[in-house]
Length: 165
Image 1 (cartoon, rainbow, N blue to C red):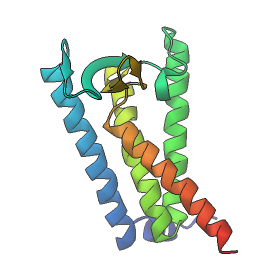
Image 2 (image 1 turned 60 degrees about the vertical axis):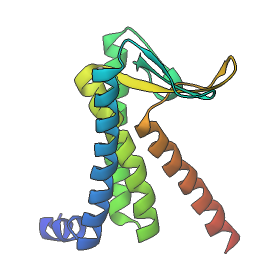
Image 3 (image 1 turned 30 degrees about the vertical axis):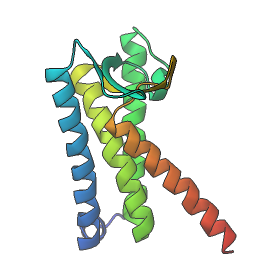
Image 4 (image 1 turned 45 degrees about the vertical axis):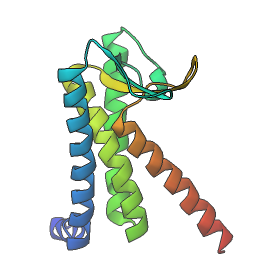
């Protein structure tokens, strides 16, 4: 039988509340950046330097525009699957050690930012355009930076754990 008090005590440990603050902080930075771009630069390509522009595009796919579609059914299915992945990550955050909790918090903070956009705007605003001359990297946003950073840390953590066995 499931003991709800035990679940409550595990989920709402003081330590987990710190990581919830990390998630909220990352989500807030992402929201702020997207609101600023949408409100102030939605119809303009802003040249910052030889390697970086701000240029708003709306991504209906997942990372790097993969699975972009005009099919509402397919879009909703992908959004639903992303929601499930976020819940799984939250579960792993709860049962992990402190270092892993931080890594999961970074990923979840970014993922929630993009998930929010998928629900509210039916697309994710991407606006950071890195390039060298005419070679452009995929346009991305602040949430993507945190997701990528978290996945990178997760991979590094895996290599470090394997090297100490």
